[in-house]
Image 1: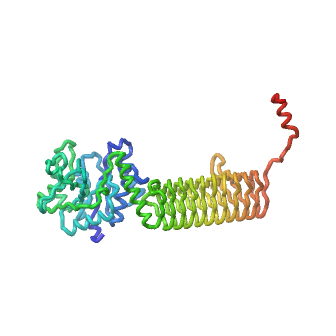
Image 2: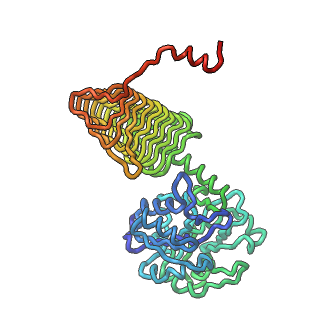
Image 3: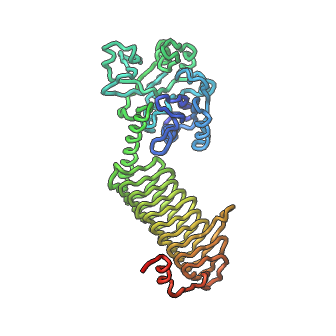
Length: 465
């Protein structure tokens, strides 16, 4: 921002229950693009340069407070135990905001507001030396919104139910986003009345009182009405998600990411993608996922809080959660990688494989039908089909170490804990319960026994001819 940060603080109103959501979850924690509604204004405020932020919580406030402390440490939490309106919330926060020159007040359920809009809003407030400013926008159908009525230098807000027929024709409406001089707000905050059907104290009434006291008020009109879409029910939640989804996709495609079917692709707001990456239809990318350049993400893949380095190919139908895939690796189809697994460079993980909390080192291969859990697979080692690291003994997880340049025969069971040296070969069908030294062949099979004439005796026993 252009102005000293100490001059401004921000109060986000997030105490409401959201009755029309018909949910036990507080409204501001309902999610769009896998992030709570409250995530978005907080992120945009941080991007706009604001540091002194408080969130007013109420309904299920303990849950909201816990989320804030985990995701946005350093943000202050205030309480509105009884929800008596926006004006009441502002008054409860007065002990906090009175030490600043200006307080910005935003609703917590408007996730589409942008940092640039907030910065322009604050700049206009300062440049015009306003005592109160509020954001407005035009709607084709303004029914239900407070109208912004301009009369020369005077600007006032008239609620829909109180507006005259001529005033209702006005298309400019109030967004519910304000910046007040704290001196001006302090002078009127105790004069707010609850003379309405809801018996609540409304913040727009403070605007009229400030103007009555001779303070300059002004509406700063924004150009994009979608930024002010509020969330009151699941339909509006889905509508906001669609706007955010397109906004994120437009951003990445403008940066050189190819999305073959944007309508079917979901990318969360914290995801980062390198240029020249291709994303095929029906892909979901969530959380703190980071994808390098030159990658190819096949259809029906879901990545969450994971890292793909450059030139990784995900063939398709892959789930990767809280894990890392190294440069030029190939993964899929039908693979699940999870719980802090690390694949190094040029690793191949193929069909119907699960890798959990393991390291697969450079050039190693786990081509198909295997489970690798709590293990370290050495460089250029080949894991045969049907291999399992038997890591759980009924009480705890145990570790398997397999060295470099090993060849693990199909259907090998490693009963952990076990340590396999470099250049080891295991015979197919072996159950390995002991360490194998470097360069050895590990064989652990029951002796084969052939029973002659078994087929004919079996037919006689069944009564066959």
